[in-house]
Image (cartoon, rainbow, N blue to C red; front, side):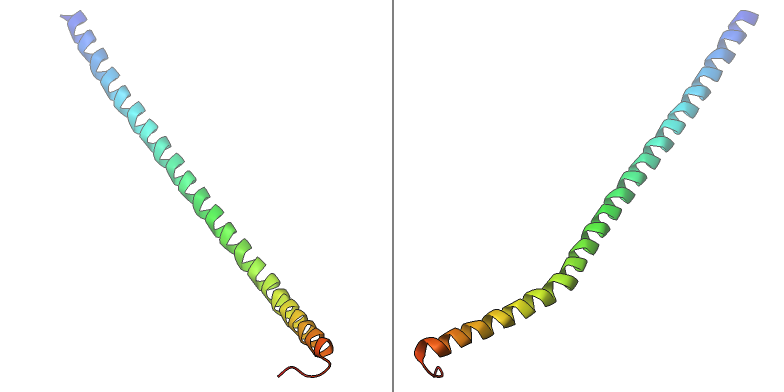
Length: 86
């Protein structure tokens, strides 16, 4: 009888221990998924910031370059025709 009781206690302790291990594993997996989601969010935010910075610094340059090129283009038309374009 004592041996049977000891066997039951050992089995119950093992089952409780397994449940605790499974809970710990689930908690680690949940934490890992949260870290992955956070990293992806941070990467997306960094990409958006880079796009914004490029737009802020490059767009005015391109607009200015477009104006310079169009004024040069008009000057070429002026000299090529010997007078103002109509």
